[in-house]
Length: 422
Ligand code: DSN
Image 1: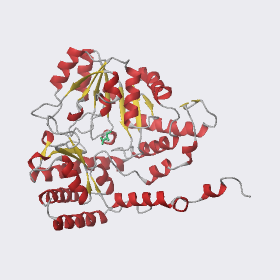
Image 2 (image 1 turned 120 degrees about the vertical axis):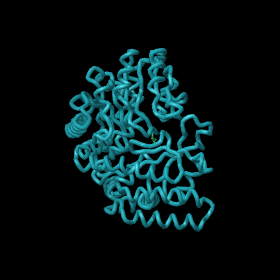
Image 3 (image 1 turned 90 degrees about the vertical axis):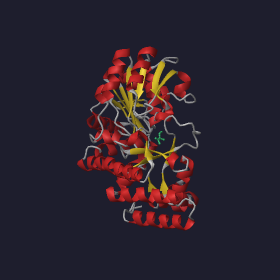
Image 4 (image 1 turned 120 degrees about the horizontal axis):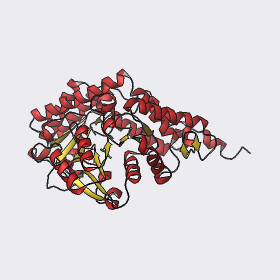
């Protein structure tokens, strides 16, 4: 008799679980055959995939490097320290915790570290670009803290710094959050710091979306201005699906204790290894070039759409995403998202500031350039993409024209192979 479990443990996935393996193959093909414009998505590199799929998934390591609650942590200590040191080098942070499982976990841990229940928290209104964890009423953040929401200006659709200052001086929040999920413009961190200082608040920047741009110097870095900076690692940073927290030394202990044991148990060491990989790449000139191209590409796409009559919220974009106001097209966000999906282009519906429409229908569409730029698109392909979107909108009821657009999307993608090694 063979030892228990020996046989199935050695079997490849395709043999052991053809059903699940088939789904993974289908998703690979979907990614290969889809023009990906979801602003928060990207294609992790081979090395990041390898680290994420490594034997580090087996290791428990509650605690921090050199101070764990389990034995056998010598190697993972070195892995985590590498990720921490590289993160400090990329962003110039005094202290880093690389254990948060996601951007939301990072934000909630930061709130847990800095605030007591009932304290006043100021964040941007979700429908104007903020995130769930910045104080949405049904999120933990909104249920636990007294939330003050600021907005973009009704005319410019950019952050209304006068309103932020006025609200901050009146309501005296303990913490102000800046950094957003659907804001197409540069954020003035210094202006937020000045407001925070004036009202005696702590300042947190959530750079989940723009971390890669910041690492490459394409967007100003909030680290010198903020008490705490949270991020994801899988968006512009092109790493594994996860989060991290940077902070000033004075908050280090509170942040570390909020992550563990406050909110999490064992860190995902395989994912931390993949964070170390992406933070190594983030220091390379090739990565910086990619980030510059992400911004150039987004502008090329946005300008093409604007020239075709689609209004851009705030009149343009400085970053990796643009927010389209679809109200002149006769389509709502959901209809447009579905229409584009039918021709092989994925994007997500998004509310437009001050709109009256329903949240799950929405009047806008968020488009982003990180994934297609990672795939190899340059300005000509972005302009072509914009034209395909405009044609799809115009031909919404013409099945033959939509089928032709789908063929063109596939032809375009064929020129930029994705994950050939898989
Ligand atoms: N889901 C992310 C995004 O798409 O921006 C935010 O959590």
